[in-house]
Amino acid sequence: MSPMSQPPIVMRHLMQLASSEGLPFEPFRPGVDIHRLYGDGKEGPSAALLRYAAGARVPMHVHTGYEHIYVLSGSQGDERGVYDAGTLVIHRPGQRHSVHSPQGCTVLAIWQRPVAFDEDGR
Image 1: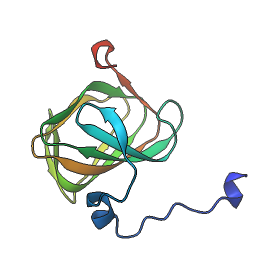
Image 2: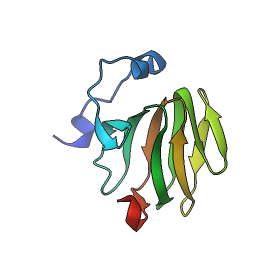
Image 3: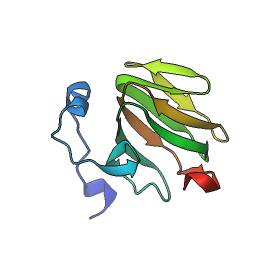
């Protein structure tokens, strides 16, 4: 099926949907689960919902393309600050950081290109 003939991905009431248990999530990192919307995270663009348990972390990584993070619930932080629900964070190519969520959160992540984890973060 060509991309032009595929239906769009429509997720209504995303703020409520992200906090429900109705979506199939799978393990991504310890304490972080992922629900992929498109792409495989290995090449090309991708998007996903990420659900962080309280205290979960994603290790140091570098962005090889733009990353858009929209915090749907809870809060997420990195070396530059803490971002509460309703915040959009855009990381530029070449930016490095690690991510943590002391209380837990759910975010919508849209990647132009995959991130590259440091050797100890793979």
